[in-house]
Image (cartoon, rainbow, N blue to C red; front, top):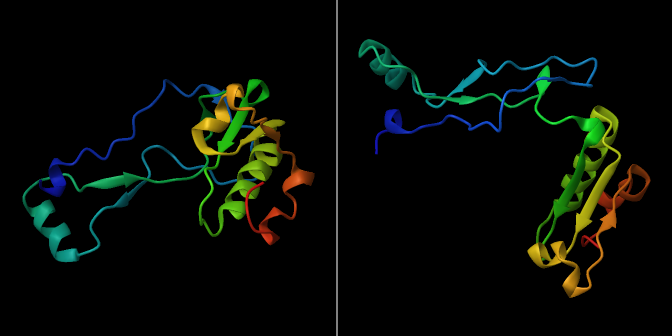
Length: 142
């Protein structure tokens, strides 16, 4: 399959209508892109053929978002095993949701998908900034 045949479009749940509660940020537009190719010869070849350059959508905060953070509850599912850095990721998600978006309820589900059901006796952990404040200095995700 040729790169130009790839569909690099990110599907959407719907129109983003909620103003982002984030402040002091430089927002990214949906039309901001990152080129797939870094080789100038390939880029010139595609432009010369009149083809669109394949691009990825740029990551970053948007001015309008789909979910209303004031009504949102989030969950993070972990499944064990060796995963260096997972505590840093958990901490960043919880702190970002809480301080940037105002999301106050984030649950941590251990044991993979099994942790999502009560029949196995696993209780989700409610993750707050004070709970994850130093998690990045510890091993494991319990």
